[in-house]
Length: 86
Image (cartoon, rainbow, N blue to C red; front, top):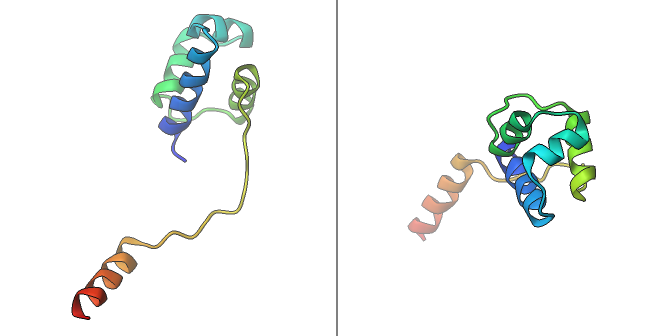
């Protein structure tokens, strides 16, 4: 999952709770600009503790699981070419 996707989920959860960026930031000791940067994915590096605190306040959870193997673009092209030949 990319940072902008995580940010979008955080924004959605915040809005669904009727909270402003400033209110969430104040409760966590963060600025409104930091919350905005996290939500838009413009902050290149978000600390794990900040992310955990933000998720806890918004009722989100963080799950860690083994990465699923997705086919590469080359594998998909090879498969597609093989189908065309049949």
